Image (tube, rainbow, N blue to C red):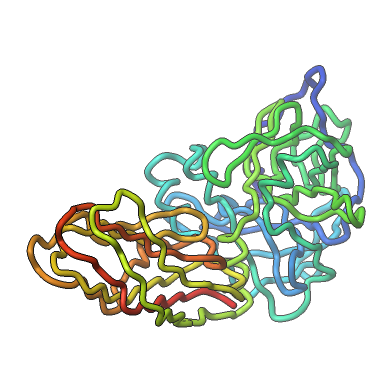
Length: 370
Protein backbone atom coordinates (compact mmCIF):
# COMPACT_ATOMS: atom_id res chain seq x y z
CA UNK A 1 0.00 0.00 0.00
CA UNK A 2 1.35 3.42 -0.97
CA UNK A 3 0.17 6.35 1.13
CA UNK A 4 0.12 9.95 -0.01
CA UNK A 5 2.23 12.05 2.27
CA UNK A 6 2.29 15.71 3.13
CA UNK A 7 -0.04 18.09 1.41
CA UNK A 8 -3.73 18.82 1.53
CA UNK A 9 -5.58 18.81 -1.77
CA UNK A 10 -8.74 20.30 -3.14
CA UNK A 11 -10.88 19.13 -6.02
CA UNK A 12 -11.78 22.70 -6.91
CA UNK A 13 -9.25 25.15 -8.19
CA UNK A 14 -9.27 28.50 -6.42
CA UNK A 15 -9.41 31.74 -8.33
CA UNK A 16 -6.00 33.28 -8.84
CA UNK A 17 -4.09 30.24 -7.52
CA UNK A 18 -1.24 28.61 -9.46
CA UNK A 19 -1.55 24.80 -9.63
CA UNK A 20 0.77 22.16 -11.14
CA UNK A 21 0.17 20.55 -14.50
CA UNK A 22 1.49 17.29 -15.89
CA UNK A 23 4.94 17.91 -17.38
CA UNK A 24 8.35 16.26 -17.21
CA UNK A 25 9.94 19.54 -16.17
CA UNK A 26 13.15 18.34 -14.48
CA UNK A 27 15.32 15.35 -15.32
CA UNK A 28 16.93 15.72 -11.87
CA UNK A 29 13.66 15.52 -9.90
CA UNK A 30 12.24 12.09 -9.18
CA UNK A 31 9.69 9.91 -7.44
CA UNK A 32 10.55 8.72 -3.93
CA UNK A 33 9.16 5.89 -1.81
CA UNK A 34 9.96 5.27 1.85
CA UNK A 35 8.87 2.49 4.18
CA UNK A 36 8.11 3.11 7.86
CA UNK A 37 6.94 -0.04 9.59
CA UNK A 38 4.48 -1.76 7.27
CA UNK A 39 3.49 1.44 5.44
CA UNK A 40 4.93 2.72 2.18
CA UNK A 41 4.89 6.49 1.63
CA UNK A 42 5.26 8.41 -1.64
CA UNK A 43 6.87 11.76 -2.27
CA UNK A 44 9.51 13.57 -4.29
CA UNK A 45 13.23 14.32 -4.24
CA UNK A 46 15.85 16.00 -6.41
CA UNK A 47 19.50 15.36 -7.23
CA UNK A 48 21.16 18.51 -5.92
CA UNK A 49 24.61 19.99 -5.32
CA UNK A 50 26.41 16.68 -6.00
CA UNK A 51 25.42 13.70 -8.21
CA UNK A 52 25.47 11.40 -5.16
CA UNK A 53 23.04 13.54 -3.10
CA UNK A 54 19.25 13.76 -2.99
CA UNK A 55 17.40 16.59 -1.21
CA UNK A 56 13.94 15.84 0.19
CA UNK A 57 11.84 16.39 3.33
CA UNK A 58 12.13 14.61 6.68
CA UNK A 59 8.44 13.82 7.18
CA UNK A 60 8.64 11.20 4.41
CA UNK A 61 11.03 9.28 6.65
CA UNK A 62 9.63 9.74 10.16
CA UNK A 63 6.41 8.74 11.88
CA UNK A 64 5.70 8.60 15.63
CA UNK A 65 9.20 7.84 16.82
CA UNK A 66 10.19 5.60 13.90
CA UNK A 67 12.51 6.43 11.02
CA UNK A 68 12.20 4.79 7.62
CA UNK A 69 13.86 1.40 7.25
CA UNK A 70 14.08 1.52 3.44
CA UNK A 71 13.73 4.08 0.65
CA UNK A 72 14.00 4.09 -3.15
CA UNK A 73 14.28 6.76 -5.83
CA UNK A 74 13.32 6.83 -9.51
CA UNK A 75 14.75 9.85 -11.30
CA UNK A 76 12.57 11.56 -13.93
CA UNK A 77 9.87 8.91 -13.58
CA UNK A 78 6.80 9.85 -15.62
CA UNK A 79 4.24 7.06 -16.05
CA UNK A 80 0.75 5.92 -15.11
CA UNK A 81 2.20 3.03 -13.08
CA UNK A 82 4.54 2.84 -10.10
CA UNK A 83 8.15 1.93 -10.91
CA UNK A 84 9.31 -1.59 -10.12
CA UNK A 85 12.04 -2.02 -7.53
CA UNK A 86 14.48 -2.84 -10.35
CA UNK A 87 13.75 0.57 -11.88
CA UNK A 88 14.62 2.44 -8.67
CA UNK A 89 17.83 3.18 -6.78
CA UNK A 90 18.27 2.60 -3.05
CA UNK A 91 20.31 5.37 -1.36
CA UNK A 92 22.91 4.30 1.17
CA UNK A 93 21.54 6.46 4.00
CA UNK A 94 20.32 9.91 4.94
CA UNK A 95 21.09 12.85 7.19
CA UNK A 96 18.50 14.95 9.01
CA UNK A 97 18.14 17.61 11.70
CA UNK A 98 17.58 15.93 15.07
CA UNK A 99 15.28 18.82 15.97
CA UNK A 100 12.72 17.54 13.44
CA UNK A 101 11.83 14.45 15.48
CA UNK A 102 11.73 16.48 18.70
CA UNK A 103 9.43 19.16 17.28
CA UNK A 104 7.27 16.64 15.44
CA UNK A 105 6.75 14.58 18.61
CA UNK A 106 6.19 17.57 20.89
CA UNK A 107 4.28 19.98 18.65
CA UNK A 108 3.00 17.82 15.80
CA UNK A 109 4.35 17.13 12.32
CA UNK A 110 2.24 19.97 10.86
CA UNK A 111 3.52 22.60 13.28
CA UNK A 112 5.66 25.48 12.05
CA UNK A 113 8.43 24.36 14.41
CA UNK A 114 8.53 20.93 12.77
CA UNK A 115 8.35 22.33 9.24
CA UNK A 116 11.34 24.59 9.99
CA UNK A 117 13.63 21.53 10.19
CA UNK A 118 11.68 19.28 7.77
CA UNK A 119 14.66 18.57 5.51
CA UNK A 120 16.81 15.57 4.71
CA UNK A 121 19.76 14.69 2.47
CA UNK A 122 20.09 11.16 1.11
CA UNK A 123 23.47 9.92 -0.11
CA UNK A 124 24.28 7.15 -2.56
CA UNK A 125 26.98 4.73 -3.55
CA UNK A 126 27.00 6.06 -7.10
CA UNK A 127 25.59 8.96 -9.07
CA UNK A 128 21.82 9.48 -9.05
CA UNK A 129 22.12 11.68 -12.15
CA UNK A 130 22.93 15.26 -13.02
CA UNK A 131 22.79 17.51 -9.95
CA UNK A 132 21.01 20.85 -10.09
CA UNK A 133 22.86 23.91 -8.75
CA UNK A 134 21.75 25.35 -5.41
CA UNK A 135 21.36 28.86 -4.03
CA UNK A 136 23.65 29.65 -1.11
CA UNK A 137 20.89 31.81 0.40
CA UNK A 138 17.63 30.12 -0.58
CA UNK A 139 15.48 32.49 1.48
CA UNK A 140 16.68 35.53 -0.46
CA UNK A 141 15.94 33.79 -3.76
CA UNK A 142 12.44 32.80 -2.59
CA UNK A 143 11.74 36.38 -1.48
CA UNK A 144 12.78 37.79 -4.84
CA UNK A 145 10.63 38.58 -7.87
CA UNK A 146 12.65 36.14 -9.98
CA UNK A 147 10.74 33.33 -11.71
CA UNK A 148 9.98 30.23 -9.66
CA UNK A 149 8.43 26.80 -10.12
CA UNK A 150 7.69 23.71 -8.01
CA UNK A 151 8.16 20.18 -9.35
CA UNK A 152 6.91 16.90 -7.89
CA UNK A 153 4.55 13.95 -7.95
CA UNK A 154 1.07 14.80 -6.67
CA UNK A 155 -1.11 11.87 -5.72
CA UNK A 156 -4.39 13.80 -5.53
CA UNK A 157 -4.62 16.32 -8.34
CA UNK A 158 -8.26 16.39 -9.42
CA UNK A 159 -7.93 20.03 -10.39
CA UNK A 160 -5.24 19.19 -12.98
CA UNK A 161 -7.24 16.54 -14.81
CA UNK A 162 -4.75 13.79 -13.87
CA UNK A 163 -6.22 11.82 -11.00
CA UNK A 164 -3.04 10.73 -9.28
CA UNK A 165 -0.78 8.10 -10.86
CA UNK A 166 2.97 8.75 -11.01
CA UNK A 167 3.39 11.49 -13.57
CA UNK A 168 5.78 14.32 -12.88
CA UNK A 169 4.03 17.68 -12.53
CA UNK A 170 5.23 21.27 -12.36
CA UNK A 171 3.66 24.61 -11.68
CA UNK A 172 3.94 27.24 -14.38
CA UNK A 173 6.70 29.74 -13.69
CA UNK A 174 5.44 32.29 -11.16
CA UNK A 175 6.85 35.40 -9.47
CA UNK A 176 5.03 35.28 -6.11
CA UNK A 177 7.33 36.17 -3.23
CA UNK A 178 7.65 33.82 -0.26
CA UNK A 179 7.28 35.25 3.24
CA UNK A 180 8.88 34.03 6.45
CA UNK A 181 6.90 31.94 8.93
CA UNK A 182 9.48 30.46 11.31
CA UNK A 183 13.25 30.20 10.88
CA UNK A 184 13.89 28.65 7.43
CA UNK A 185 10.21 27.74 6.90
CA UNK A 186 8.52 30.03 4.35
CA UNK A 187 5.21 30.12 2.50
CA UNK A 188 3.80 31.24 -0.83
CA UNK A 189 0.27 32.57 -1.12
CA UNK A 190 -1.55 31.83 -4.37
CA UNK A 191 0.51 28.71 -5.15
CA UNK A 192 -0.63 25.15 -4.41
CA UNK A 193 0.32 21.57 -5.23
CA UNK A 194 -1.33 18.25 -4.54
CA UNK A 195 -0.87 15.64 -1.85
CA UNK A 196 2.31 13.63 -2.37
CA UNK A 197 4.46 16.47 -3.70
CA UNK A 198 6.30 16.74 -0.38
CA UNK A 199 10.04 16.74 -0.91
CA UNK A 200 9.77 18.29 -4.35
CA UNK A 201 12.26 20.92 -5.50
CA UNK A 202 11.42 24.62 -5.51
CA UNK A 203 13.46 26.26 -8.26
CA UNK A 204 14.27 29.95 -8.65
CA UNK A 205 15.65 30.99 -12.02
CA UNK A 206 19.13 32.48 -11.81
CA UNK A 207 18.78 35.81 -13.66
CA UNK A 208 22.48 35.73 -14.57
CA UNK A 209 22.39 32.33 -16.31
CA UNK A 210 18.71 31.52 -16.79
CA UNK A 211 19.28 28.17 -15.04
CA UNK A 212 16.67 26.73 -12.64
CA UNK A 213 18.53 26.75 -9.33
CA UNK A 214 17.34 24.99 -6.18
CA UNK A 215 16.21 27.36 -3.43
CA UNK A 216 14.15 25.08 -1.20
CA UNK A 217 12.17 21.90 -0.66
CA UNK A 218 8.38 21.70 -0.53
CA UNK A 219 7.11 20.47 2.86
CA UNK A 220 3.50 21.61 3.32
CA UNK A 221 0.54 23.33 1.79
CA UNK A 222 -3.20 23.91 1.47
CA UNK A 223 -5.49 24.48 -1.51
CA UNK A 224 -3.97 27.97 -1.95
CA UNK A 225 -0.56 27.97 -0.18
CA UNK A 226 2.76 26.16 -0.46
CA UNK A 227 5.22 25.77 2.43
CA UNK A 228 8.95 25.55 1.74
CA UNK A 229 12.12 24.86 3.70
CA UNK A 230 14.65 27.32 2.28
CA UNK A 231 18.27 26.31 1.78
CA UNK A 232 20.74 27.99 4.11
CA UNK A 233 24.11 27.50 5.72
CA UNK A 234 22.78 24.71 7.96
CA UNK A 235 21.18 22.70 5.14
CA UNK A 236 24.43 23.06 3.19
CA UNK A 237 26.34 21.82 6.24
CA UNK A 238 24.04 18.79 6.43
CA UNK A 239 24.78 18.12 2.76
CA UNK A 240 28.49 18.37 3.51
CA UNK A 241 28.18 15.74 6.23
CA UNK A 242 26.25 13.51 3.81
CA UNK A 243 29.17 13.84 1.38
CA UNK A 244 31.51 12.60 4.11
CA UNK A 245 33.13 15.96 4.81
CA UNK A 246 34.34 16.54 8.35
CA UNK A 247 34.84 19.63 10.47
CA UNK A 248 38.20 21.32 10.40
CA UNK A 249 39.34 23.14 13.55
CA UNK A 250 41.42 26.26 12.89
CA UNK A 251 42.80 28.61 15.54
CA UNK A 252 43.12 32.29 14.69
CA UNK A 253 45.44 34.38 16.84
CA UNK A 254 45.70 38.06 17.60
CA UNK A 255 48.92 39.07 19.36
CA UNK A 256 48.29 42.80 19.20
CA UNK A 257 48.10 44.69 22.47
CA UNK A 258 45.16 47.03 22.88
CA UNK A 259 44.64 49.59 25.61
CA UNK A 260 41.24 49.95 27.28
CA UNK A 261 40.82 53.33 29.01
CA UNK A 262 38.85 53.47 32.25
CA UNK A 263 35.61 55.34 32.69
CA UNK A 264 34.62 54.96 29.04
CA UNK A 265 31.09 54.16 27.85
CA UNK A 266 32.27 53.06 24.40
CA UNK A 267 33.45 49.55 23.57
CA UNK A 268 36.76 48.80 21.86
CA UNK A 269 37.00 45.91 19.37
CA UNK A 270 39.62 43.17 19.36
CA UNK A 271 39.15 41.36 16.02
CA UNK A 272 39.76 37.93 14.52
CA UNK A 273 39.48 37.55 10.73
CA UNK A 274 38.00 34.17 9.74
CA UNK A 275 37.70 32.86 6.17
CA UNK A 276 37.51 29.72 4.04
CA UNK A 277 34.70 27.72 5.68
CA UNK A 278 31.80 26.35 3.61
CA UNK A 279 29.60 25.18 6.48
CA UNK A 280 28.10 26.55 9.66
CA UNK A 281 30.13 26.90 12.85
CA UNK A 282 30.05 23.81 15.07
CA UNK A 283 32.79 24.68 17.58
CA UNK A 284 33.83 28.06 18.96
CA UNK A 285 36.45 28.43 21.69
CA UNK A 286 38.07 31.64 22.91
CA UNK A 287 41.35 32.36 24.64
CA UNK A 288 41.88 35.86 26.03
CA UNK A 289 44.20 37.66 28.40
CA UNK A 290 43.24 41.09 29.73
CA UNK A 291 45.51 42.80 32.22
CA UNK A 292 43.47 44.90 34.65
CA UNK A 293 43.65 46.08 38.25
CA UNK A 294 39.98 45.30 38.85
CA UNK A 295 38.11 42.71 36.82
CA UNK A 296 34.76 43.93 38.11
CA UNK A 297 35.10 47.15 36.08
CA UNK A 298 34.97 45.31 32.73
CA UNK A 299 32.16 44.55 30.30
CA UNK A 300 33.27 41.96 27.73
CA UNK A 301 31.43 39.97 25.05
CA UNK A 302 32.17 38.00 21.88
CA UNK A 303 30.31 38.95 18.69
CA UNK A 304 30.02 36.75 15.58
CA UNK A 305 30.19 38.21 12.04
CA UNK A 306 26.40 37.96 11.82
CA UNK A 307 25.85 39.76 15.11
CA UNK A 308 25.19 36.94 17.58
CA UNK A 309 26.53 37.81 21.05
CA UNK A 310 27.89 35.79 23.96
CA UNK A 311 28.65 37.71 27.15
CA UNK A 312 31.95 36.89 28.82
CA UNK A 313 31.88 39.28 31.74
CA UNK A 314 29.35 41.84 32.97
CA UNK A 315 31.40 43.64 35.62
CA UNK A 316 31.89 40.36 37.41
CA UNK A 317 34.90 39.33 39.47
CA UNK A 318 34.92 42.24 41.92
CA UNK A 319 38.39 43.32 43.00
CA UNK A 320 40.17 40.35 41.41
CA UNK A 321 42.93 41.21 38.96
CA UNK A 322 43.12 40.26 35.29
CA UNK A 323 40.70 38.34 33.08
CA UNK A 324 42.14 35.14 31.65
CA UNK A 325 40.26 32.67 29.41
CA UNK A 326 41.88 29.44 28.27
CA UNK A 327 39.86 27.93 25.41
CA UNK A 328 36.52 28.91 26.91
CA UNK A 329 33.93 26.82 25.08
CA UNK A 330 31.16 28.96 23.57
CA UNK A 331 30.08 26.41 20.96
CA UNK A 332 26.54 26.24 22.29
CA UNK A 333 26.10 29.98 21.81
CA UNK A 334 27.39 30.10 18.24
CA UNK A 335 26.59 26.70 16.73
CA UNK A 336 25.01 27.17 13.31
CA UNK A 337 26.22 30.72 12.63
CA UNK A 338 28.19 31.86 9.58
CA UNK A 339 31.84 31.51 10.65
CA UNK A 340 33.40 33.62 7.88
CA UNK A 341 34.00 37.28 8.57
CA UNK A 342 35.20 39.42 11.46
CA UNK A 343 34.68 38.06 14.96
CA UNK A 344 35.12 40.68 17.66
CA UNK A 345 35.81 40.68 21.36
CA UNK A 346 34.07 43.86 22.51
CA UNK A 347 35.42 45.32 25.74
CA UNK A 348 35.07 48.43 27.88
CA UNK A 349 36.14 49.58 31.32
CA UNK A 350 33.09 51.56 32.41
CA UNK A 351 34.29 52.56 35.90
CA UNK A 352 36.48 55.62 36.44
CA UNK A 353 39.54 55.37 38.64
CA UNK A 354 40.55 51.75 38.20
CA UNK A 355 43.46 52.50 35.92
CA UNK A 356 43.97 51.55 32.28
CA UNK A 357 43.34 47.93 31.26
CA UNK A 358 45.06 46.17 28.37
CA UNK A 359 44.23 43.22 26.11
CA UNK A 360 47.53 41.33 25.78
CA UNK A 361 46.60 38.53 23.34
CA UNK A 362 43.77 36.33 22.15
CA UNK A 363 42.94 33.20 20.19
CA UNK A 364 39.73 32.04 18.51
CA UNK A 365 39.22 28.42 17.49
CA UNK A 366 36.53 27.75 14.88
CA UNK A 367 35.36 24.28 13.89
CA UNK A 368 33.34 23.93 10.66
CA UNK A 369 33.37 22.27 7.26
CA UNK A 370 35.88 23.80 4.82
